[in-house]
Image (cartoon, rainbow, N blue to C red):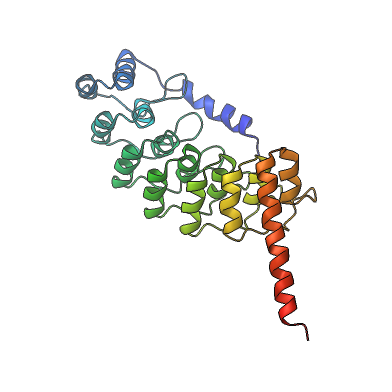
Length: 261
């Protein structure tokens, strides 16, 4: 698997192949400022390509989605743009709207049938980005449009794993309700619970424990989730885990005693 740095470098080669002119610059600035009339005026010029990348690897189309300038986005969408066009990091407009919590732009792009399964240079879908932003509205929109809740990026991390790492318990709960597999492991054999403990995300860990996460699972280094909870030095997390383990032990003891002669 080629490194992200290599993929970015390779992608950058294409950025110098298209001439950037004054109209491209005007369009970018108008979108950046949310100046709808000026956007419309520039788009009326012959040969304008809203998906053309500047030297930073951005386009006016991508910027409108990133900033949440819905009126500008609507104008550009009416210009027959390539919905799958990507920026320098391999993200399309749907990725960028999702990553920046712009749920209205996410909705508009989905209405135009922007594909939900495309991945960026890290192998992440728009749902991964929406999860990282902690935007439940975008997550729901993407799931309703068929986004895979168990899609793994190039590190093997699913939206649930990222939601846990980013300490978004409400997103964890939402993904689990939508069928996220709590037991999926990444390239280091770590589960969402393991990474939640490693990143000391107590509230997210609590959601996972209540949803039946396997506390005995070990990663490629032979460590379980409680090991990482202790390493985090987050006493609230350690106490949560101890209480859970104590309750499990008591429950098992009670179950065994019922069958004793």
